[in-house]
Length: 292
Image (cartoon, rainbow, N blue to C red; front, top):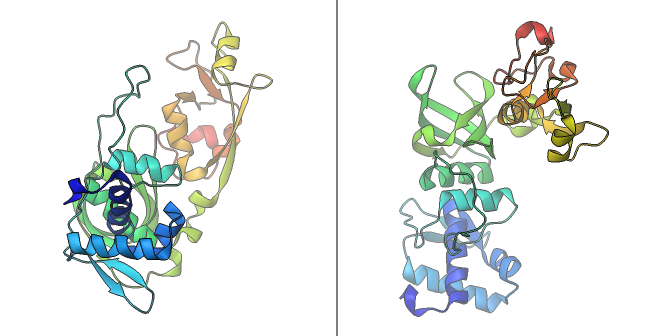
């Protein structure tokens, strides 16, 4: 029956499907805001969706919202990479795989791909402000049961990870999206200390001053690559994400200057900004004595 619908109808149905899958809820107002259509048209779309997928949503009359059921089965295939990229830009279309890749403008190849059901479960928990129970595979401790309270999904340049409060360690930590199994949402209030507002490293903004590495013979080329002003690049970044940025761009963070480039084209000029930041173990050439 989906094939018999025109593209505009399928797009609206896919958006309903997307909202239920990734946010756990949808209302007529969401369709009105997204597609600028009338309430009557939105009601018809929701009725048609329920006709096509009667077990996917239930209407809560008090809030006039349709909520995702435990028996939800998506009508559309939502590519997690496309959805994550769309969410990161501030929007998400239901039909996520409708564009053809360019033959002349090519992204770097990703080797790690998160599973759609994992992304959806995390996004629903973030949207509802709830915790999730899961099985997580860590490089340091192997597989273990965790209960986390997620508040953001971030692309660190190599893979997608989740910023969350971890009840096992009583701290905010990063979790790689591809290492989750058996995620179940916990429908219970979370504590104030588990929320984003209390994630100190997430809410702290650092100003990093990045300059061409002193060992570079012709620094002007680097200045042009990064559109530096007066020989430096100033970047505001969350403390929780600074280590990822410094590692992705191989920014030399040691107080001892390398005698050769050693693979480094950039250097952090204000090392003192890293003092007291717990999540910077991955910063290139950074050692404990460098930051006191």
